[in-house]
Image 1 (cartoon, rainbow over the protein chains, first blue to last red):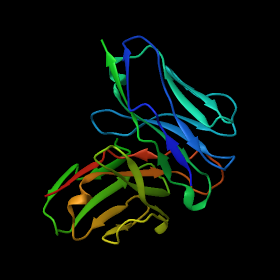
Image 2: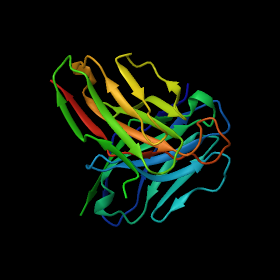
Image 3: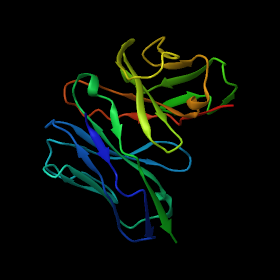
Length: 116
Length: 118
């Protein structure tokens, strides 16, 4: 079974600085999808960024980018120019493209604090 | 316009009661999901539905039953509520079958329903 590990329960960053959140996963599949979701205090789950495993190019969405290392099974999220509104729980998630495995498997989350 | 909506947002009830949480999506998606987030913030899939058929059924108690009257709705019924059912329940939807064509299958989440069982 696939697993997702986020080794940093909490992280802190100064406003305008850069922070990287770690995520590793375990799978025997070669084709899959990876996601980062943000959950602010409002509780809403918001998609931050996604990556298809067959794409070698790292995904980027404005200030958010990933470092996808397929061989190492690593999928870290970099937040540049951190803003107060980035404070939230961040969840890394894995999804298999196949059959009954199509649900998201989440890591335990990293709580990010942003200091003014 | 709200893409995925859930009602109610908060639900407080007594042990032993039966309750339902409703979910609606207006994205035209064909697959809907229910996730449970426990007190430690851990999210885990409970069910998913595609075209009114259950296609994933994780090992949840049979007191929980998903019901989909149409493609845009997936309601969660819970019978004989227990203290351990207290959690936040999220509905989500996506555009492709989980085992589909390889299109990026992003799941979009509702705002969650916080269930408290006393």
